[in-house]
Length: 639
Image (cartoon, rainbow, N blue to C red; front, top):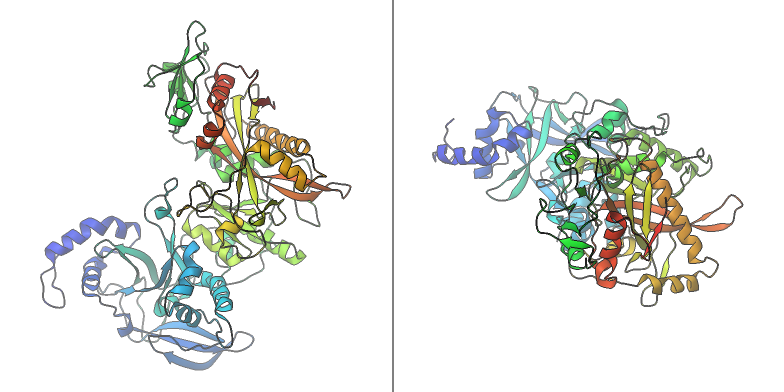
C-alpha cells in the first residue's frame, strides 16, 4: 500500500507505522481496509472534509410531529437555537461507498467522565452555551444551574462512549469516557436501514479521539445520511428499550417478571474452572504439627500470631493457601494437592458478581409482589435488573412504577467493580438505558428513605455497614459472622437531589483522591450513639435482622450446585465482606421498622482497618476457618 499526501510527501513508512499501531483497533471497529490510507492522510493533515459532500438541514415540526416542507440550511457552527425542528444530514452530491476517500473525521465537541460533567459546564469557557445550542436547551431568561440541569438530562440523546483497555480494580483511568460529537456528527439521525456507520477512534500519535464516519451504501445527491444507533442487537424488545432516548414508547406490555436464568448464564462465569474430584478424599489438615499458612495479604500475615500456625513463603510448602488470585482448578487441587486448603469455593462468583448475587438471593423469596408498591420479597434485596439481558424488563418495570407515581431513582453499578467506581444514581430512564453502552451494569432500586446518622459537624448523613462472614462448609452449610463491624459515612447531609454529588450519596471515601475526610467510628462507640439517636430501636434487634439476611443470602447461594450456586468442596474455606444499608419500612401491622438492605459482597476484602483496630482479627478468622475453633473468638455461628 503506497500513496502521496496532499502536500506531496511520501507516506509509505509513516503509513506502515500507523497501521502497526492502529490496525487492530480499525479491524475491531469494522473499518474497511479500503479507507485506511485515506484515514491516515486526513488525520495527518487534519482534514475535515465532510462538508464537501454533506450538509446539515433542519425541518420545522408541526405539533403532531409531522414535518412541514420548510427547510433551513445551517452553517457549521450550528449555533442558532431553533425549537421544534428536526435535524438531518443530507448528501450534496453522489458519494460512492467504494471510494477510498469516503471516510470522514468527526470532531468531538465535549469529552468527559460523568463525575466531571457539571464541573466542565461550569468552568470550560463557551461549553455551556455550545451544548445548550446543540441539544436545543432553552437559555433565555434562565440561570446557569437550570441550563446545566437540562443539559445533563438531554445529553443522553447525544452521548457516545469509549474506554481505554479493560477495567482494573481501583483504576479510575480505565473508567468510560463519554463524548458528544460536533454539530455535524450529532445531527446524523437513526434508521433501521442506515447508510453509514460511525465509530470512535483513538489516534496514539496525538492521543486524541475522533469519530470516523463511512458509508455502507452508495448515496445520491439529496439522500439523508443515517446510522443505526443500536447496532448488533437482535432482541427486538431490548433494542426498543435501548432506543428509548430517541424513540420513546410504551414498554409496559413487556413482562417485568424475572425468571431464574438457564444453566448457560452461570456457565459463562466459570468456563475456565474445574470441579473437585470427590473420589479423592480430603484427609484434613495435619494434627501432629502446626498448620503451615501461605498468605499473600501482608496485613493478615503480619497479625497472624496464633502459635498453632506457621507462616511459609511458598504455596508448595503450605497446608493452607490464602491468595488474591482467583482459583479455578479445583480438580487439580483435589487430585494433586489433596491435603491442602484454599481460601475460595467453586463458583463463589454467584455472590461476588452483582447480577448473579441478585439471582441467587431471589431464590429465598416467599411472597408475591405487593400490587401497590411493586416491592418484592426478600425485603432486604433491592429490586435489581441486569441492564444487558433484562433491559426491556427494567424499562417495563420503570414505566409501571412511573404510572403509579412511585419513586423511580435507581443506582446503576458495573457488575464487576467495587469501591464506588462507575456508579450512577438517577431517575432518568434515558440515562439508565444508555449506560450499558459503557459496559455491563445492573440497576438497583435506590434507597430513598435510608436510616441516617447525625454527625455534629455535618448533619444527618448516609452510612453503610460492613460485616465479615466466614464460610466453613457448603454441605452442611456452616456460616459464621464476625461480630465486629465497620462503618463508612457520607460527608454531606443526605437529601434526594444532586445525585452527582459524591460526598452526599456515597460513603466510600478511603479511595477518593485528594484525601477527602474519612469519618471513622468504632463499632462499640457507634452502638450507644445509634441507640441515643433512635431510642425506640435497640441495636440487638437491628443486628438480628441483619444476621437473618445473611442466613437467607447464603441459603439462596448454596441452594443449587455449582455453577448455579457456591459449590461444595471440603478443601475450601472463604471470607467475604457484606456491605449493607439500613432503611425505614413498616411491618404488616403498619409499625415503623428498620430493615437491612444488601449492597454487595466482596471477595478478599480490604482488612487493613480490621487488623489495625482489632489485632486479634487474623487469629480469629484463621482459627475459625481452618482449626474449626470459634470458641472465645469474636464470631457468631449463623448456620
